Image (cartoon, rainbow, N blue to C red; front, side, top):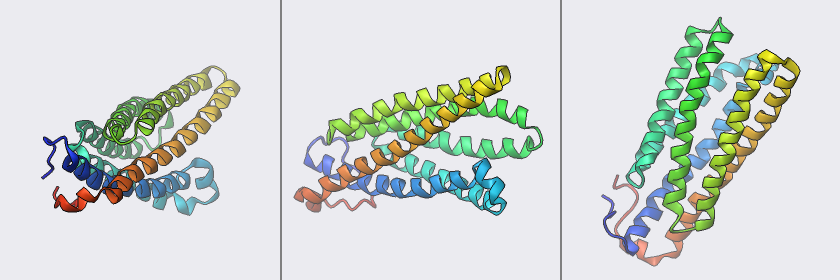
Length: 222
């Protein structure tokens, strides 16, 4: 098990070894997740309908594994566990709602809004956990995670506003929705970049710190 009570070199080495390994997996898992989101996009699905079901399956599998990894790394920050549980529960509930209200798009949209808010909480816990675990290794990337959260909540708020505007004035609502979609894409790209940088920070520490080779920790003790 982890020597979390020890604040010395062994503690940092174990932390770098374990998180470097699993955040690296999360980084690579994020990529097929993005591909899946493109496959299930309405515009892409209308042009290539055969991609819809495989995209939905790939997206669900990626999210469930991503949530499981968040739970796995929660020994280093309990907020990872909360985020992981939310990711898994939200995806299962989303699938159920889409199946039940498949023929009622308006009701489905209304129900997905609170579900999106729950997902927002999950993202918050993940971003804050990333920020805190990497802070003692790189304060700059830790600060960027907190800043990214502000961008994320801003883009989500704009999305909700655009949905409301659609019922008031379609043109303005669709314009706001386009802007929010672009903002969400930018945030997703930045999250991928920061996840890479965070994992690389841990991996670089592991490779450059000779003490880690003497700690007896291999990353499989959990």
